[in-house]
Image: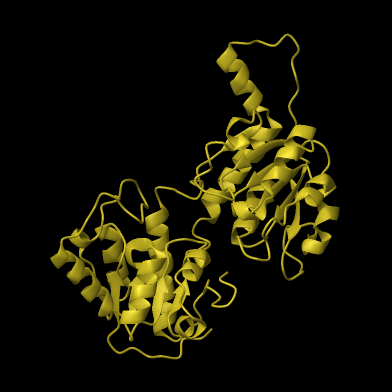
Length: 355
């Protein structure tokens, strides 16, 4: 969607924790833009790219007034206010000049939906995500999961913990020459495919629009997925959580896999029927699962996934890296240039489907 509005003296407000060096890089790239940044109004980061900041942080009444006054003076926001849906709802309601909010998350559609903003408001206030910024760390995590499954690291860790040196040496599987299926050949999926091909894997996958993709053996839609799964040695899900993808990877899909398939999920937990996954793990259709996301987060303490011997549980942290704030600031800076020249903003949240 083209930006049809022109701003003579645009104002950007930094609504979430961000290092001063990255704020200065935004200013340096766009000297005509006023960038409002008051770090004392923002919760300190507990780790790199901690966009919500320290939960113990509180503003004084005077600081709270200054924070919202700053945001209400802006045309553009870097981050959701207080990094939550309620903050987005409030600023959209209070600031009639607001045109664009850049969200820190790649999958910010859920937060936008939870804000309760109507379609008309979301047509006025564009929300972009940081999709693509997390592609490389997610892809590296996915490759780690594949290698874990092929090289039996869960069994090795269990033997080490028990100080067992098995009499029978069990061979591992070669990644080279194996087949990977990626559900969701977007930026994350294509980056995963690139790394997988570097290891000698053949890659196929799904996309909403079936079209040839460089380096991908076969592209299909969801209807053609079972046929792809039948030949897969590993499956990586990168799909977002939407009404269309909910429990898409269900019992039928796991049954379509050949025995011993390695499964990795770096998309959203709601895409997977976790009961069906557990059954597939127990009957051997899935030999190993590396999971960074879950249907309910935090993963409930009574979930069988915690203690399953062939499951790695990661607390939705695979996208995090020390470089994340820099990468998001660079993405925002590039998008700001597009916005100021009337260009098309990438990764806009769909105000209807929230994707």
